Length: 373
Image (cartoon, rainbow, N blue to C red):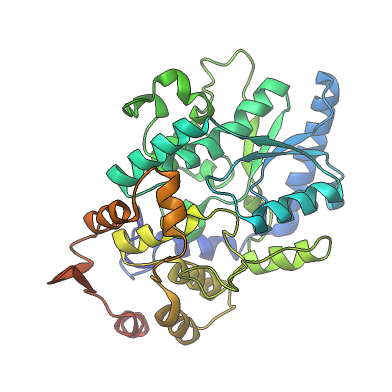
């Protein structure tokens, strides 16, 4: 990963914090972790029965391959009855809807949280214009809604997939955050501020309820314990897809691959993802392909040389067909969207060559050569 990745740090040997944690994970006794998970789930079953609720845990579920694989692990291997909670995508894709329905048809209870769309459109445009992130508010909702529902339904346990800050290079707040997610993690890393401090014109605080993470000091009941499933299982997207495919059909991107990516299996459920990842490329100089390739290198599924060819051919691809839908959602013209994109270009990453032409200040092959010394 490049040094422009938010919150990434490197040690004196040039090893990023993600790889430092990875070196710890490859020495993990996964059998012990699985036993710990089984104990926690057994306790959750007992507590759910004591409270008179039928679901043993809540799973934050997008309908994508990773969270769907977790749902099946919980059901098939641990005999757990999870409630799947989805904070709906901004612009759901047909593929994403099919994938959600396929898993529900297999045999799960699910709740789809559909927030006020007028408010969501306002927030999306505001954060796109001010932060270059049209999904920042959605990320807050993804964090908050499973906790809010578990609290309201008195379900004792909540699962999220993985802590990206730990897995891929970021700010790990403490050792406990390898295992647990909480309000501090949401504010510090995922969203950047409590939603009640957003002060978005035309959006009163009363309309921000779906995005507010419950606090222990204001909740009438104890908050559910909230865990990262990847703490208990060796985390690998390719393995998750293989496991999922044993049970249900998973529909990949209708394009064959996502914009700016070399596959069509990640983030296929929201059209806005295409703009989101393109903005990552604009702001930080790396996009979807670089991110995916880095993870596959780490897990031994690609060599750096193989990855760099994929990145050169696909990273930073402009999502031409997705821009009109994204613009319409944010109540903008495509011209306005392009203006905002250029406004967020990082001057340390991009050089203005005149005539509205931008050239990257980096070279992928040089970057790989420097890594190999």
